[in-house]
Length: 555
Image 1 (spheres, rainbow, N blue to C red):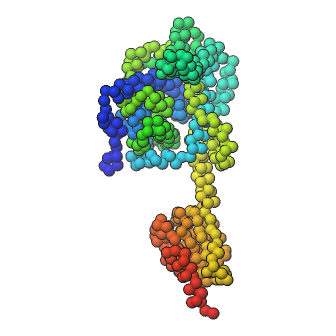
Image 2 (tube, rainbow, N blue to C red; image 1 turned 120 degrees about the vertical axis):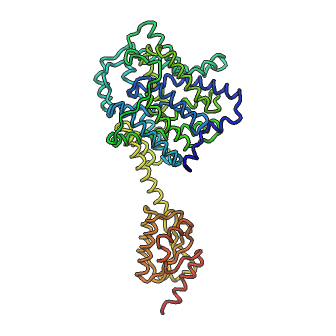
Image 3 (cartoon, one colour; image 1 turned 180 degrees about the horizontal axis):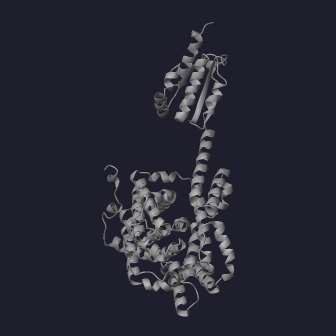
């Protein structure tokens, strides 16, 4: 019950002082985001190997639940481009039925991550890993759209990188010039609308109003109208999928068994991890735009509920979407009501205007995704690699290459392991031990020595104590530990080994300056009991105790 008491959707606080002006702003923002979300939802679903309605259903269900239960005031949930590669691979390897189970499991994992307050742990993933797999996913998204962009006649596309390249090369002679033309014109319209039109400024007073309409929707309307009016011989949603049903699907619980769950655990973990990263990164971007701070744990719980509900109603994995969230903020959204409005608008669209989607050309949707893939990647990071250490660049490039050639699961695992290894190496290299040249010990260096340890004394830096064992004095060894920031159990064990070595050679070991964390561990591990010279409060008292050993020693 204590854990569940932390479940507090942000909409409860956001609606305090709510008025008509804010309501109108949220309704306008919701309408705008719905226009942006519609073509992206269909494009993401088709690219993932699913029918277009799966993306729309996900946008409606997840968008509604994330807005209603989430931890951000302006976050928009729905299908995302980052999931395309993973979802397509699961569909190809396990089938759509098992994709539903994997999505359900990822929803449970996301909810538990938020319930046990693990939202902040996602921030510990290094930026080099995030940029590497994001750029890799962008390349795979662009590559997966070459088939529809060129209008190639391919029955089924493989999921692996080299298989895609081989299939495209084999079927290149089946290129459809009409589809290529539709794709190129659509891409040109999107780029011109979003990059050239705002530059007109004062020269065209109407440009400011037109830019509120997304370029993807403009290209979609123009391409669909051209195909319908002129009967262009290109593949459409109607010719491939038979259109979009004008109703929400019925609730369907999948056939579940533990054997399937065992095989789907890794895909589910990948979906949950990527969903957590994308949603919390998106929420942080939104925080910077509105001057607010989201609740990461509440956001993860909402994402978990959305990913549990969406597949049961014909949906696919969902997360926070940066493009739609930014559009939401720029359109004047002030509360989660805008996200609720965007979901309800799409519900009305699918109930009323679903038959119109049959003429949408797949080449236009491919052009939209190519533009999304380009904007998704952080390509400048490759050009800036010279400014960073080789370890940063090596991690980024290795994660990028593994994402493209193998899969995201392997890439993230290797990336995080590499980042952990590099971090351990860095921490170990910062730890050091230095001998103190003190006037009190002048002429007595062979009898009494004082050393200072700095940094973290952990499993990666235990060689420091080995260095001390190789150069022990004859009577007393003073260790100043005031600069030891952290000690783990392996570091404490290394100190105990040093203490036993000193006892065996008749040398008194005197320590001083332990921090609270190190002192607590020393007490619990039995290290304090092995300090024959005791634990002194500071270096001066430790030296005094060491010099007394010379007076007590026989001539």
